[in-house]
Image 1 (cartoon, rainbow, N blue to C red):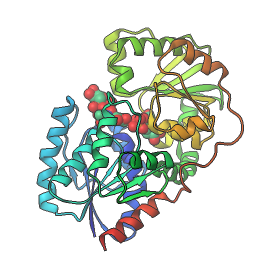
Image 2: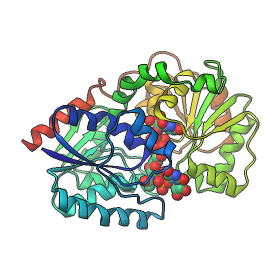
Image 3: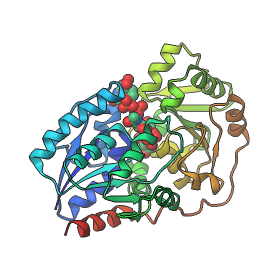
Length: 354
Ligand code: UD1
Ligand code: UDP
């Protein structure tokens, strides 16, 4: 079988490190296409190097632009490659513009589409991710849901055929790379951090960065906290903090985005995590760290229902209160599969293409 995988943004490199590597280890042919949506070394190359992801066969170098321009440019470039490579299936991950372009281009050429992380819904259609995932799910032939909630979301939209509830590949990734992170990451020493002495934060969602009011409120909360905050800053957020001329407190240490192994290490050693990232909410759960989510809703409702994640939006007081008082106890219940999701996905794709 010949699978063509489309990736382009940071979380997709991490997901591909599990499934794509498994597809190849099973002796299948995979063409890897990087759209170039993320392109800085610490947003792209570092993941390929650290996680042994094969060098992409194609890099479209699409880069940053408005949604229509970015997605449209991907479609044009991908079509040429699909027509040349004639894959049996196109594999996409998550909910970025690269996901939608990869799936839509395949669907138009009648190439079957497999979607990893299908069925997620925030029920907030203003989010570009929600638009991308709904559209991708409705043109996919194989839909791999990470949770029962995602499976039910698809059922509610009458998407039944080809749906497999398989668990979450990001759980595979944490299990796969946790030991290596312990061995090689020096980030704790580099920034002179004592375990459990700091809060780890990430911020990058459009709904937070594109709103002066929301980003101001978030940065104010973090700055007013009496805790040390480590903030590996996404370039989008860096740009907006400068543009809005926001005051950042001395307790916040802004660092460049880090590689996955350093990120696991930073999460494992943090007291709490405060984030708007989808992937980081789950990793906090896998690593038993209290997670404070600076969004108005989450797709990962299991983490909230099991008591390890609290939704605080961008409200300064709610963020501060959770930083001080959110202290879950017990053990997070298993809700994301057994850590063998990439093998299950590979097997299903192989059976489907037999
Ligand atoms: C994208 C995804 C989002 C995902 C995130 C993961 C879409 C619509 N959004 O958001 O779902 O959670 O990736 O991180 O696909 N930039 C750089 N260097 C880079 C990449 C980006 O400087 O290597 C800056 C550019 O100013 C760019 C901005 O970040 O305009 C946003 O990048 P973009 O890929 O459009 O969206 P993300 O916010 O990264
Ligand atoms: N991540 C990373 N370095 C960072 C910030 C995040 O390796 O500086 C990892 C994080 O551990 C998770 C993934 O990137 O595996 C999440 O990606 P992101 O937050 O960019 O996107 P989302 O998951 O919200 O789509």
